[in-house]
Length: 155
Image (cartoon, rainbow, N blue to C red; front, top):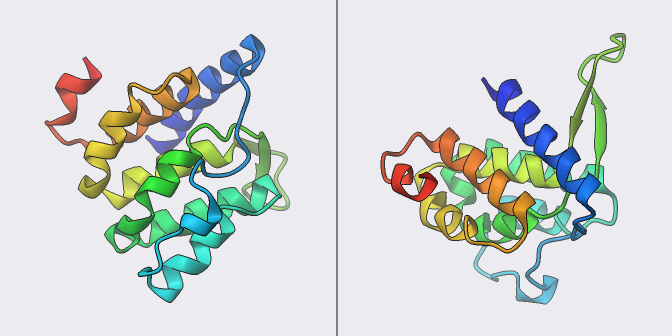
């Protein structure tokens, strides 16, 4: 299921790139505005969202998602990452020729879906973003939440 959603997001991602929409390399919240009340574990990964390398930003988003609702304070920063469409190719198995295409924005959307219901309202708000890439990834994350409150917003 995740792979199908990532493939859908990737298709839209390629289309958006083709249309020339610019990406942002980091969250749209300045680093000096990171909340000071974050746990040490969450703060370490939030700081990773500001890495210059797209792979490190994607890995940080992934790790935040794996923390579940414990990473809820990072939701605004992950929402800010949805526009980060820097392409990354990952080998899921070092001996395999299969490559997974992703981006920090896609990984942020997956993370928001894993964080769960605390991300519901911010994701609904992201559906109104001017960047179509952000809107698509917000919709993908909302679908992952499987919360009935998201239906009206998605329609």
